[in-house]
Length: 208
Image (cartoon, rainbow, N blue to C red; front, side, top):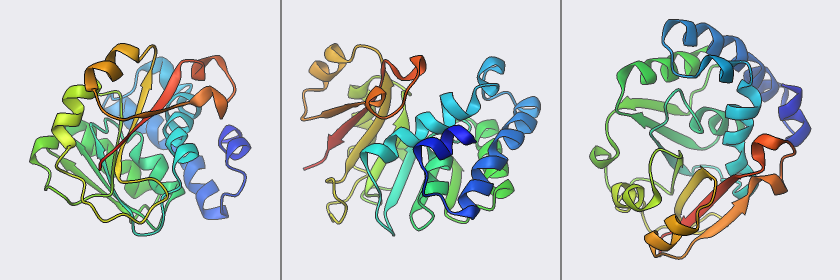
């Protein structure tokens, strides 16, 4: 929890409480339904919570922004972002029901009222319903873009144009060339210290 406060010092007492509850909740639910590797549970705040919040270093969502989290797994990056941006609305989807069960229980456990979790595939989500799509390395960028390109509407009111904010690691040169679209890559090592973040990035793909 101190790690989160180090990089996000303006949290409200309520947000501090919510972030502080995540460790115990994920440890409990991961014992029931394994959605995070055992080793990663011990590093939850760095490898999952703070990593998810890397998107917030790139984009500060304005109130009423609608955000779709595709392939959310156990709720990343959606749940940490929903805590940080309580006036935005988050729709977290995954094709695996047991993962959505964890998302629902964790969201309920910390009292999140701005999260909706659903077992579904990205292709089945309504078109033009969101300002941004977020995700954490569920597949290569080109097929992911194909899944979500119709999900974002054209009404712009954030500082960045509507589009994709994608957490990825490693060398992305080949993937970005394959995608063939305008992108902006942000290195998380510019925002967070530590070996884990040395190769981690946020890829922003604006929709025109």
